[in-house]
Length: 114
Image (cartoon, rainbow, N blue to C red):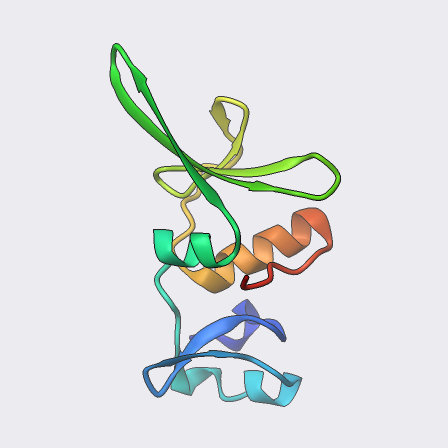
């Protein structure tokens, strides 16, 4: 992993085990860490709820995190951030630390494992 992708509090695999980066000095050893693949399991750990909708064209799945201020942080089933019905970015999240960093950049808050 490249250390420029990481922040204190990001989850990575350290020797095969999920670990949260506690100190900035630990980021220097990013080459020894591996990213954690973003999965439904991790979304649930962060408090996202899964919603499935059936349409004539097929099924749609979204993952929604309700924030305290009433706003929602939404991902589609391709793990793209959504604004209503439209993907906000032409970018799919692949790893837990990417979700953590994007969420922090957009909200100023950390994602907390529940």
